Amino acid sequence: MSERRVNHQVDPSAPGGPAAVSGAPRRPHVVVLGGGFGGLTAVRALGKADVDITLVDRHTYNAFQPLLYQVATAGLNPGDVTFFLRATRMAQRNVSFRQAEVEGIDPGTQHISFVGGTGLHYDYLIIATGATTNYFGTKGAQENSLAIYTRAQALRLRDKIFTNLEHAAAANTEEDLAIVVVGAGPTGVEMAGALAELRNDAMATVYPELDPRRTHIVLVEMSDKVLAPFAPPLRDFAARALRERGVELRLNTSVAEVRPDGVVLGGGEFLKAGVVVWATGVTVPAAVKDWGLPQGRGGRITVDKDLRVTGFKNIFAVGDIALLPEPLPQLAQPALQGGQHAGKQVVALIAGRPTHPFHYHDKGTMATVGRRAAIADIQLIKGRSIRLTGTLAWLAWLFVHIVMLLGNRNRLATFVNLTTKYFAPSRRTNPIVGDVPVFEHPGRS
Image (tube, rainbow, N blue to C red; front, side, top):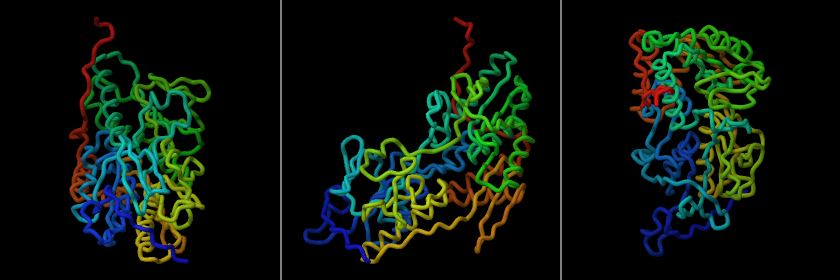
């Protein structure tokens, strides 16, 4: 059955409201919350629709999360993986941008309130705000570890790593150094592999004061395997590649507490570390509970098969924040495909047509350990798949991640930097670092 078109009332806060000609109907106003994979794809799906779109995000940029670990390990500039959200208007004139943080949603009046007292009216709403780091209640984890879910977090982690290296070189205490990475999913594995290659390829030359053999990369994982969602042969390849690079794997090991100087493992053992990287789990931001929308497991907003929020005819949710009747993994592809689907359903509703169920097409997953070492499980039609390891998987990983970046400038910069990093002689490696505070000896008054 077709849904009735929403009654569009003129609102001064909506695009076209103040300038609307008296007596002339204004275009429907679609608000998209979140400038990540899902949000931007939804905006593009509405590119030719007779609507006004407002894209809302608390940041003015989109950060390409799959490559943030490269920023954290000084392989890429933050600008390489950052896209200015207002630039969407260069190719799509029916969209405008609003920097704001959502405080509440009133479906009855179709009004969104922002932190600071401002707000916005909507006729159709697409929620694609994503998720945030999940610390699982681990004591001290939020205060004493560093995540890599946002650009700011990646930069803090990068500067923390190089601060520890510089201060260790200046102190000349000959103590062992350690970086602990918690979580052996794709982010944790890629982070540990990149750190190991940084140590193996550059440290002896760049930091002659430090012995690379006394700099330890430890990957801690609660389960008995790395990259659990992948097939066993792919997982085994990744584990071997990590060990070959000198990463110490601590499987079947939980973290009970994170302290400023290391981690306490579930069995009571203490691992001293200058840096602890938290790369396990995501959750919905706590503020979502104040939005007046139904939530399910993990705090995710429950949606029906067409991606409309349960109980609401003109609100959609996509990506990490959405919980479908048959839950999907919190990865890029569900967000990309969900955003496109939600945009098309808005067009259908405006035209008085019925919505259609969302069907996710699994294109496969990839992960990289480092130079010429990656795994790929590429899904083909009729349930067939291709599994790749080694150099071929690594080249496929490079190609896909560069193509997925927003903007030709970002693609070119990332291609140049990653080519230089992976194909130039290691003696010419030039890590991209920020400010590091000058070391002050603790015994100095």
